[in-house]
Amino acid sequence: MFNDIIWCFKKNIFNKYSFIYFGFFYLVSCNVSNNIYFLGNLNVNTPFYIDFYYLNTGEKVFSDSLNSNDFNISIKNLPKGIYQVVFSWKRDLLKPQDIERFTRQPELGVPKYYLSTTFWLDNEEENEYKLSFDKVYNQNELEEILFNQVTDEPTHMWVKSSGLNNKLYSQYLELIDGFRQKNQHQKDSLEQLGNYYIEHKRYDEAKIVSESLSKSWLDLVKNELIDREILFMKKNIHSDVILQIYDFQVNSKQDFERYIKVYNSFPDDIKQDLDSRLKHAIK
Image (cartoon, rainbow, N blue to C red):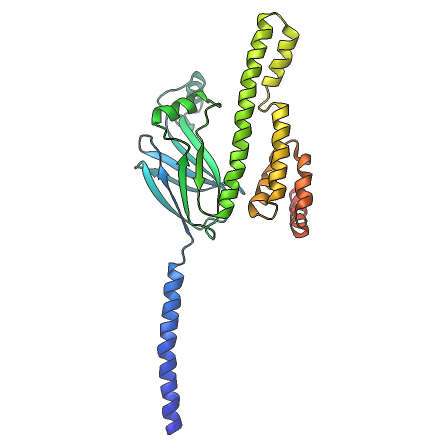
């Protein structure tokens, strides 16, 4: 009888504290969020549109229309990796080729302005990501740059967080942007030289200059950029960011062989995984 009373007492105590424990666990679990919060301000007329693309797959993972210049968006279940965010809004000015395209393919809709950047996202590091610019742009300034495709005055749009990998990827973008500006400045100087040759009827030399200007990147600048990229990637070889950058580089560039130095710096298990994925892609 006494033992039955003790057992019953212990059972009630267990049930009481089990309820408290599991209730606490439930509350903690509910407060652990896999959301990310994307916030910022864009000085264009509303509504404007936002799209997220996961660059590992090219898939659009989020889309919305925004009715306020200030925004704070919550998005669920995004795996870590490199994303592209694209803002778009209607264009009042159209180029002749835009009108021709719309006439032939009206189903594509009226042309828009597109403003985009890429960034590293990982909600295990940080779940708040903020859009920022190097200076305050009004709508007219943005549209002039985008409409005329002014390459020597980039908009310097970033998406930043306090996460270490996000900061590392931002450093990579700054590296690329610096060389992009250097490339444009040298092309501007080369164009002046080409005009000088034409003016003085030195057509053979003008032709050589014209051939160089037809390429997106000048050879000397491109070679220097790749060397700097490789050094940056080797220095940070153990970061998840570098593996994804490497994947994009070797899959999208004609001179991917030059990145073999980066491949050789990866740990053996990463190299095995890369080799396995390559074999699967070939099949």
